[in-house]
Structure formats: C-alpha cells, structure tokens
Amino acid sequence: MPIEILPEQVASAIAAGEVVERPSSVVKELVENALDANASRIEVVIEEGGRQLIQVSDDGEGIHAEEIGLSVARFATSKLRTADDLHHIETLGFRGEALSSIGAISFLEISSKAPDQPAGAVLRVEGGKAQKPKPAGVPIGTQVRVRNLFFNVPARKEFLKTDPTERRWITTLITRYALAYPGVSFKLSQEGRVVFRSSGNGDRREILAEIYGLEIAREMLGLPGGGTSELQVQGYLSPPHIHRSNRRELTFFVNGRWVQDSSLSAAVLQAYHTMLMVGRYPIVTLFLEIEPAEIDVNVHPAKAEIRFRDSGKVFTVVQRAVRSALIGQSPAPPVDLPSRWTGQAHEIEGQQSPDWSFWHEAPSRPIELEAPERSQGNGDDRVPLLRPVGQVGASYLVAEGPDGLYLIDQHAAHERILFDAFMEANRSGSLEAQQLLDPVAVEFSPGEAETIEAHLDVLNDLGFHVEQFGPRTYRLHAMPSMLMSRDPGVLLRSVVEEFEEDETPLASEIEARIAARICKRVAVKAGQVLTRAEQERLLRDLEACLAPRTCPHGRPTMIHLSVASLERQFGRR
Image 1 (cartoon, rainbow, N blue to C red):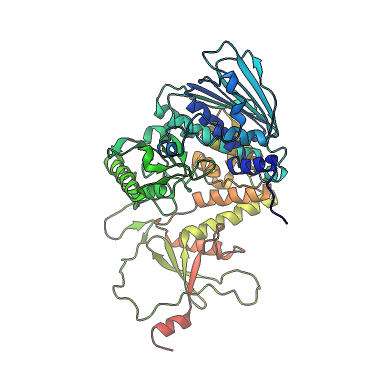
Image 2: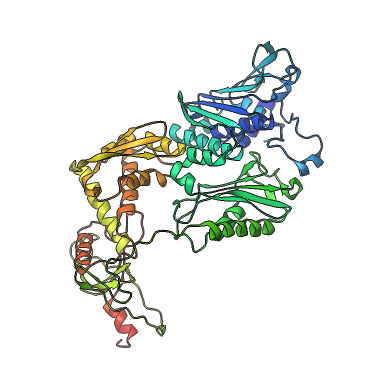
C-alpha cells in the first residue's frame, strides 16, 4: 500500500484512543481542567457507567466566548507557549488534546461563562465536527456534557467493563482527587443518586472517613510533612494491622497530579517491610511536592505516568518518611495468646504439646519432596488414609500414610474443606441461612458499595441476607448457618475486599470466588495450635474432598515424602 496522510477524522480517532481509554479517563481530564480553572466546587453526574452521560460542572474561571471554539481544537491550550515550558509545568493539563479527543468520539456540549463577561456561550461537537458557538445565559464556570461515548468507535466500546466496574473506577478517581484537593467541594452522582460528597472545608481526615469509614479514618497515621528542601512528603498511612489483599489502595499525587509510579510503590512497601504479612498491602495516600524541573510529566498521553530526574533520591526520601512515621506512631497490634500458656510446653484440652527441637545441620543432599500420589484403584484425586503424628510450627500437620510422610498446610487444607462443603450445600439447595439476633451494619467505601450492590442477588443466593441501609451502609440480617461462629461484619467485608476489577458477570463464577474468599477468611490460621482430635478431624475431612491437593486459590495443601526418599536420605538405598 502507498504511504498516505490519514484523514483528519481518522487521525483524531487514533489520538482519542490514546487519551480516552474508558469513561473514567474522560472524568479525569474534565476534573483536572476544572481544578486548573481554580474551581471551588465540582459536580460530576454519571449515567450507565459513563457510556450514556458524563457531566462535569464547576464554578471556575470559565472560557471566554471568543475562545470557546478553540477549546476543542487539537493542541490548543492556555497552559504553555514554548517547549521550554514543558520543564516547568505547574498545571494538571497542558497537552491541548483532552477536549479534542473527547469530542472526536462522543456528542460533546460545552457551556461556559467567564466572570468578566455579560453572557456565556455554548459549543456542540458531534464526532469531531464542531458547530458554531452560540451565546447563552449560563452561570459563571463551565459545564461539559459528554453523551454516547465511543458511539463511532464500536471496537473500543466493546472492550469496556460492566457498568458497576466503570462506576467503581470513576468513584475511585473522584474520591482520590477529593483527598488531594480538600479545599474543593466534590459531588458525585451515579444513576440518579449521590454516592460521594465532600464539604471542601480542607479537612482530609473527614474525606478519609467518607472513603474508608470512620473507624479506619481514626486509625490512619498522619504524615504531616517531611523530606528535604527539594522534596516534601505528607499524607496518611494505615497502621500495620489494617491492610488489604492488593495494591489498589496505594495512591500517589505528585504536585497535585495522580500518578502511577512503581518506584513510589516500592518505597512504601519497603517501609512496611517485616510489618505486614506476605501478600498484604497497606492503605497509603501520599502527596509529594517537588520542583517542576525535577520531573518529566510529558511521558504518557493520559498524563498518568511521570519520570523523576533523581528517582533514587525520591525513593530514599519517601521510604524514610513512611518508615519513620510507622515506627513513631504505630500502636502495638493486639495479640491473642494460646490458652494456658506457660512459657515452655503448654496444655490445651488435656493434650500436651511436644517439646519442639530443631535440626542444626543441613542434610548432605536436599530431601526430595514429591506430590502426593493418587490412591490406587479409585481413579480420582483423593489422598490415602492418613494418621496424624503431630504439628510443626503450629502451622503444618505431620501425618503418616501408606507410602511415607505427608506434611499438610492446615490453613490451605481447611480452606479446601470449607469450600467444598459450602459449594456442595449451595448446589444441593441445602445451604441454610440463620437469622442474626441483631442485624449487623457495615459501612463501605464508595467503590466497595458499588461492588456489593452489583452482587446483592448472588449474596442472597449464598445465604447472606443483605439490604442497603443508607448511602454506603449495608445491613446483614442472616448468614449461612455453617459460618455462624464467625464475625458477620468481617465475612461481609471479605466479599468485597479482594474483588478484581475484571470480575465477570457470570453468577456461577462469582459465587465460587465469593465462597473461596469467605473460606480463606474463616479457615484455621497458621500459628493456631490444634489438639490431636482437631488434627484427626481435619485429616478425615480432607480425605473426603474430591480435590484435596490444593486450596480453592490453587495453593498446594500438602507435600509427600515417600519411604523410598527417606531410605535414600539415610543411605539404605
């Protein structure tokens, strides 16, 4: 094919795909424009997850009527003039592509009025074709309405997630910007109801309470400000006993810009090193102020990434600031001691724990650990009958089988047992729900509330009778009978805490994920001492499982040390 210059409409659509990935990308660009216009109030309205309508209104400086037509022209901006200005950017926007890109893939309407003008103007753009601006009586500030997003780019529209997922992205975006700009009043309405509101009084702790709930907001550690003359760090950190199963609550703003940066994440996690369990992550929101010349913000079309001139120095300053705050402010976490602890051996329900001893010399060659062999003659994945021998490190059961020694991870094994029982009861219709004497109210963050609302039917099918009780509070009236010994609020939180952004709408898959998540939370923990009777019961229940070798998340439940391996280790072969 010969080389040809692309038509303007095609080029605009390609450029729009770089800037606008999903509805939250539109919201981000419009909110940043409002902040650059020194707005003190920003209101966002969403319909159908942003597909049908995104409306952002502000009371900022507005656009002059004679310039409103230029606002949708590509590379038209009021925020820089020369290439040198790229080294000293102090605004959130600067590329001059946002409104042009949005207008290329939607029906866009901009109405705006500057304070020093008697009247405002309205401009409409349909699929990149701008109409002539018209005068209009509108309030001071700007309102942007985006309808039918991606109407002319069906391939991009098909790749959008479900409405609850898109709404969750938007909610997260607005709540984070409310934290970064506490002096600005934010209001977010989705599908006709207000899901988030901040007062704009400058109190970040108040916004934390709106996002995470009052209890977590009270416990968050304040990082009032530290660092060097070139780099200042402030923000909020969760104490080590408050954590999540993913990195989604690591939030970083650099000079007021929300960014994704692996070095900042690494610095924070390094600061929490040895304070959190493996696979757990803190809730952290940090605000960095650095000289504009020390960063490059012109890296990503959506301005989501930046580069530091001296990333090593930034890493060190952030790591030390966070670590210092943790050591200086973290309260001692509660510790549950085993009953009847004596400091040496201890006795529980008449069972004397063994006097543990440890090998100090390594074997001459590595011990061979083998996967458990299938039982002979049954053709399934069951394990043979096992005889409990004892417990190692209060985490692993030692058992003897027909062909050697088995080491069983008690937590993973109990997860599998509970999961199989839960799913079988659900399949057979025998899953019973038991009413709570007093309903338990649980408050969620705006994003978590979107998640639980989207899955209320699935929760009710699984025996959790949940109803909305306020904007972000849900009340639990009943729960599965087999889980009645557990904390109802903790179980309900576990349903939403680990949901992935790409959850599919298939009810069967969601049921399995919820069940696996609940079983992980309620299974016996590593470090929990089990009596001989409890060890015996766990082994018998594991033997009855159809897939006993792994937990519901795919982690192995056991390893096998065969008699032949033992004989080789002791030189008998």
